[in-house]
Length: 453
Image (cartoon, rainbow, N blue to C red; front, side, top):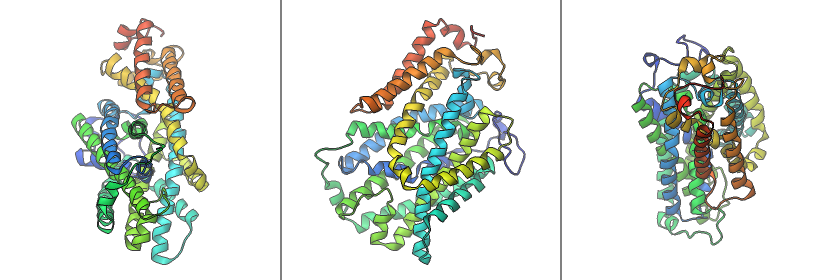
């Protein structure tokens, strides 16, 4: 990244340690702002009444603690190298082969932006309706995403400053909402809600879903953690920030779902409805929390989509793809209810596509290459070190395809009661190591030498 001030000077070049800006609080705030978001709230709402409230909280905490481990490990690669996530695909997949995960990530992030922009539009519409009586969901969805674009095109520094403010406000407002819920409603009754006799989501599947939620952030984590001042800062800030945020967001979702059952209300992905029905003023506060959460998350999503694009076309100026994709996300967000009906399938699709990729990169860096990437060779697309066979690492592609088929089969064709996230991750990682050894590349590969070059 260049150090010029002003509009859109971010790039895929490594960031020197003396140019980095994120200390512990900045990193902590970044991941609070990222994960206290309505989609995470909605995930927590899925668990009650399929299981008891206390069991749901236990699974949320445990799954978050486990899921944050690969998130932190991937983010640490970004801190050590100063490179964004999709550029770090090159050593494993090859200089040309890395374009596939970058393209998939780009498309996935645009899908995220669509869903979340609509949710933010709903919340902003609720707030404006409460204050003025005016309602126009389409307008407020568009305005939300326009604001996201305006922040994103100022690059990482603009995002970092925004996240600090937004994260602080969200935690305060979330505490207000939680306090109201437990004062207004009977917490003892919430704890006493019995689990469904025929649950759609078992405890193991819920655990897998919580872990999978962490995996949705791994493809973008290095885009931000490459700005961390030290490895210790990046690891501690990310792990604590992500876990606190997940507990707040999913815990709020489980709480809202439980109280909606006690109040004989229809469960909804919008917690503002429940809170607003009992206290319009607190409904306004909840709407602001949701709006700020989606705003902060979508800024990060659009920024990372742009970085994914730049990993494929590095000579492009940052603001051009940022603005172009911003327009695409504005238009896509108007699909509205269709987006929500596809939300759970969208999460499953991300798992199928990205769990094998993350497994390969983590195993490649920490086990096969023993925590060493040649940064200069990564950035030189014609460099033989990561060129392999015409730019593609073929045995890594075999690992990815087989891992993706494994994830697809046990997600869609023969769904497992335990979920497929952890199994697909472990399966692909072991397969990658095995194929590396079978191809007789294990020793030279770990030293950064390629026999296919």
